[in-house]
Image 1 (cartoon, one colour):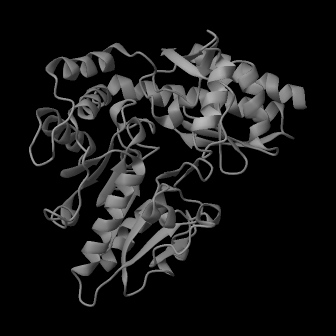
Image 2: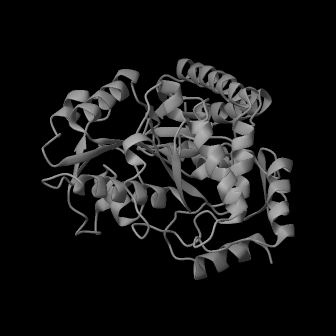
Length: 398
C-alpha cells in the first residue's frame, strides 16, 4: 500500500479528533522517524515529550523483550506483579515521594489526583471540595481533567462540566490567595505550563503556593505529565525548584513510550485512598512497568540528567540567536531543560509546516509558541541541524 493510500484509509476509519499531517510513519531510529516511503525526519516533537530515549533504544527494547519472554504482559491488580512492585519502589525513591498509583495516561493520573483531593476535602467538617487551577493550564481531555484545564476553548460544547473549580493567574500568588475559600481543598499547577505556551513557574510562586497550602491545609498537586521524567534537567521538575508537592502526576515519558501514568503521594496524601476508591484495569501492567523501570534506571544516572541540562542550555542559546536575527518574527525564548519554546509573532503552524517540508518535526504550544521537546538523548549536532532548518523557515518569511 502506498503512503497516500494509507492516509486515505486513515481518514476513512479514524475519527477526526486530530489535524494530522499527511505522513505515515513506519519505523524509527535514534532521533529520526521514517515514513512509509523511506524519508527520514529529525524529531523534535518526541511523541509530544513521550519518547525520551528516542527510537529503538537498546535498553528499553531489552526491558520490553524480557517481559515478552516471560509471557506476563498483564495480570489483574487483584494481585501484585514483580515489575510493578520494583517500579513503585524505584519511582518513589527517584522522586522523593512515598507511594504511587499506576494508570495509563496523564489524564488518568490527573483524574486520580482530583478524586484524591475531593476525598481529602470530605475528611473535613464541613466538607471542602473546591479546587484551584491556573488560567492557560492543561491537565487532560477527560471530564475532570478538562475542567481543571484553565482554557475555555477546551470546555466549549462539553457542558455541563464538573463543579467546584476556579482559575487563578499563573505566577500571580495574590490571584491564588484571592480564590482560597473555606471550601477549598487543593491547588493543582504545572511547574512548567506546556500546552499553555512553555511557561516555567517562578520559584517564588511555587514556594508561595506551598506556604499557602500548609497554612490552609490544602493539597498541593503538581502536574508533571509533560515537564517531568527528566525533561526539566532533573528527574522531576519540582526538584529543579526545591518545592515539594503533596501529590505529583506524571505520564508521557514515564515508560519511555509505552502508555503509562502515575500519581505519586507523600505525607498527608498517603492514606487518603482506601481499597475500592479508585482503580485502573491496565494500570501497573508488567509491560509498561518494565518501561518505567528502564526510564528510572536511566534517570538515576546524574550524567543523563546533566546531559539534558547541557543540551537545554545549548538549544536555548541557539534559539536566542534566532530572536536576534529575526526580531520581527520571534520575540522571546522560554523553557527549562529540554522543554523549550520560541515565541512568534506569526501563527506557529506556518513554521511547523515549513520545517516539516525540510524534514524537521516541531510542534506548537499555546497560540504563538513553537515548541521543542526532543528526545532527551539529543546531541548538539541534532540541535544545530534543527536550528538551521528553523532559520531557513524564518528567512523565507523575512
